[in-house]
Image (cartoon, rainbow, N blue to C red; front, side):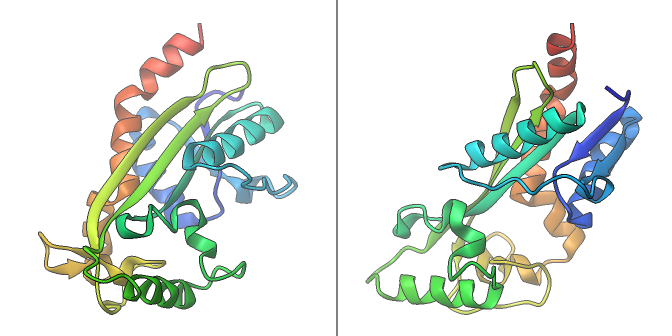
Length: 204
């Protein structure tokens, strides 16, 4: 294992920056899948956020022999039985189209009379290393589904995810403000509290 290196199982530079902010003060170098172009993509065949995150983290950790952190995130809408859930990115089709996903969500909720429209953004993070018990943490952000998209910031379902305390959707918030309260931010805080202890206990 290369000392003080953490691999984040993403090609998204924005996600990587969030982890850099957390682990830089610990002296860790953050790498992403972009630093390992020869790795095969891990298919997310799990039936839960944890299964998908665990699948990515543990598979890649075995290939690179490093600590790997993977996440799986999505939107859970109460009146839709927790959907789209793990299918959030592909809710309207395999091409991962944000606009069509949002349109389908509004259409599906429109068929439910007196829908409360309450929802949660969920994030599960899994840290893995070969031969160790993986570390699993979660974070959630509660909100409501708006009646129409609002705001130009963010991505995915952010234009529909309304926060009553702010009177805005996530897409109307400043990105820095969003990153302080997001489901991933909550999961990162949970990871921060237990990561060092996990390293000490599993690395003995």
